[in-house]
Length: 118
Image (cartoon, rainbow, N blue to C red; front, side, top):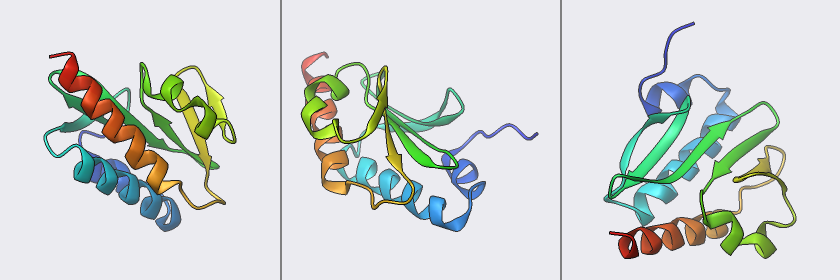
């Protein structure tokens, strides 16, 4: 199995319908965190700002995982309550439209939080 070393390669490894969702999340992150550094960490797309983790996302057979650790999930727990969650993660089912506005809100929150932690 080939090691994935960039986000384009990561996304291209999925079926088209999942690729579309991953691209949407990537665009939201780029739009709302233009200074974030994009890379691969823990085998998935990862974004850092001020040398600290901002958000991660990952594609799976039945869902898109979104990780806004450490505080993004706690801050938005009420809005995320309708989705399956794990410690520091939320799962957006592939059979549903992505909550793009909510994802943008979370990214903006993490960016503001990152600025305060400088």
